[in-house]
Image 1 (cartoon, helix red, strand yellow):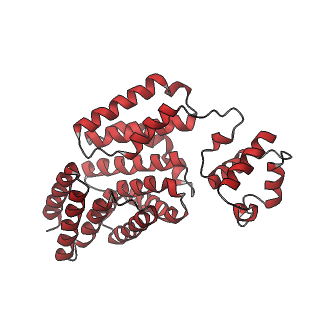
Image 2 (image 1 turned 90 degrees about the horizontal axis):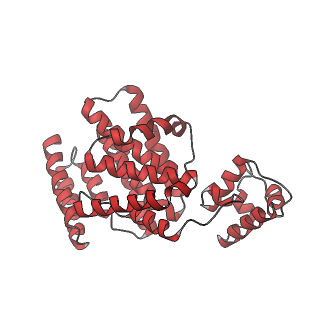
Image 3 (image 1 turned 90 degrees about the vertical axis):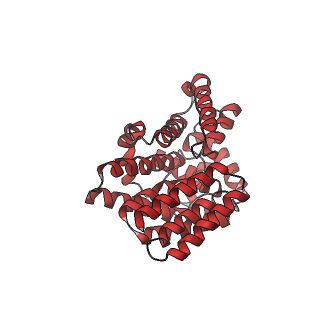
Length: 303
């Protein structure tokens, strides 16, 4: 008990959060309760523990008594898989497959449950993107979707589940050629929830929130909802400014041209040219090809 309380206190102080700031309006956790937890005088419920972990920006299992630091090599592999989109690059796809093999052979069986979910989602996302086949992700989506629809706060693994849901939903509905009313409502609600989370997210999680928004934009196209596109652009630009990470800015510009192409062709074309210019600046040839293909498809679709 004392070990948990001491860990909470140290992590809270490392983030520079006073107890009143940490507890906020005290609807989830009072300052008095936090004091008792940190002194080892009070055992938090699972719900309270999850709230504390969320405020600290860590998975809840990190606070468990039997928690062990994840192997450094596993963390390196996971970081690479999270941060390196392949844009159809076959060599990078093969490298990522090798990394997944290493994780499953050397680490997977000993990982905490939440980490296993992260690995499963990452592998499914890559498989769906590489094959344009939603079947590689539907089992996971079906397992978690109802639960996600009833949540207002999302953990790191939840965001990966939502990203997978957006990818699978887009491919599935493209093939069907229509969106049911219930699916429209579900998609719009989930996309709005992710947008609402942007400013509340930990800085280190913003790259994933950004990728979830990118994944959801295909569904925005199917919904033909220009306001969602506009909102997504605002949130994506906010993330770029907050993180000072402009590597994905060509994709944000692509989102903007998709917004304008239906109403203002000249502005859309300007955004397309800006996206290509930035992709050249970053030396991303594969992204350049993807941008050209996307522009050609949008011209055919909308003009």
